[in-house]
Image 1 (cartoon, rainbow, N blue to C red):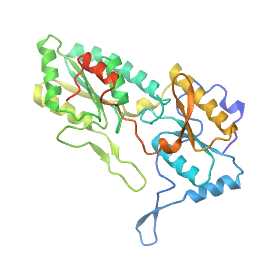
Image 2: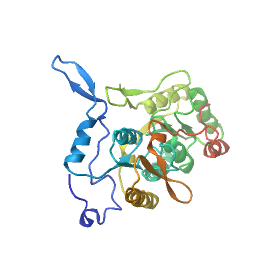
Image 3: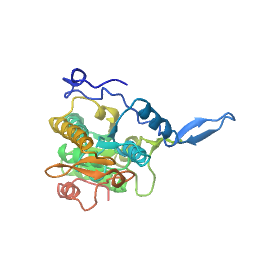
Length: 311
């Protein structure tokens, strides 16, 4: 633990990552511990956090993160700790806020990658399958697909028919466009199949997804005979210098969180509405995922542009 002085935070707005340190492994409310008999038991260790805050005479916790972090934060609030949440996730899947900081940067980088892949795909007349993050929500894939002019976008909210994706590839060939960009969220799944799981969930952990890009790539090549390559952007989306939008959002969220504590608030998350940052109850956010609405205008935009969604 260290004190956040002006000197420590000066000049960090353009940096990716965090100077605080972070983890998304483990949950103090359901912490796996080895027992003397060799078994693993799910133990609630949140009391140790409350004791630590009391020992260090800390007034409150500002929890910066996604659904997992804010669900834990809400539980700590219910146990008596003063808590304010700040929405941070590249997946943009937190409810009650228009956006989370990190999302715009991820989409900007993924779009740049698609711009580059268009060149090589067209030159070699290939199908390029690009896998991006998005375990249960397809915000990154959908926004990147539109901005980066993908020809097919597969997201978790819409189970896909691989034959329709292959038909899109063939149709482009017939139209004189012998290359195709297919964008796939890691949590996308076929209508008659299952998600690709790299690592099954353990106690206190979420399952780790991945591999759907390779699966889609193989299926397209088998059905069309087209040379198909797969690119997994993965953790590249989590790094790099943040966009100006994300820098502004982070500063607005951060200052709003401090104001909220000064007002005596607790059990809330600062959220981006229009035009202002507002407060929403953590209990309205915890455990609730914001999926892409099937009637959203963004999804309709993709359809109107001729992007194949696999349905």
